[in-house]
Length: 212
Image (cartoon, rainbow, N blue to C red; front, side):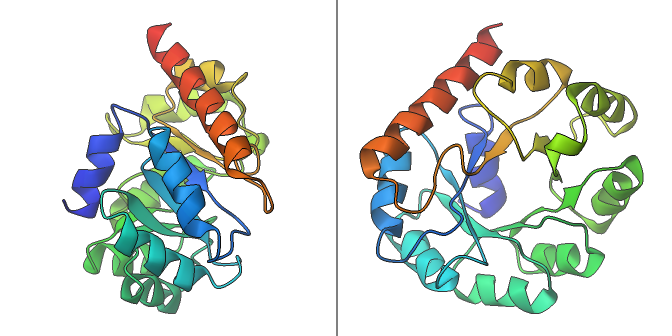
């Protein structure tokens, strides 16, 4: 499947991106296997992690069914390095039109970070496949709802930052398409059992928002 097909396949099932900041290449495969066993298929390794491109290469090669890529992607050169490593997902904390365009040109999935309607419209015009609302702590579900009212129908809005199983329902009711989950899911040094338990708490919370 193409990156976009993988993403579209995940959205109706479990549209949660695992942000594995700080993961090492020695534990990347075991953590990814744990996440896949829990139904997570969207995996992000921030580029400020130890040897992130090694981890991405290992994960993408070993688990082709997952959509594996990088976060904290800030430059066009970053995009190209992620692509060379086999990554298919590019997530940024900011919006940079050149980064979005290069991501799309290389056939990868683009999720730039935005926090205002102006940034959101500019990112979509540049070709972004969806929008990372970051940091979500700066806004609220009410802000997301207001943005949803003016953005094109079907725009993917994924809050990142401060998301917990307890507050997902409010964001979902406001129109969130999914979420990026970081330290509440994974911190360096966590064992497989801890990651599995956190992953299951989040997947169960998402299922609860869908049933509401």
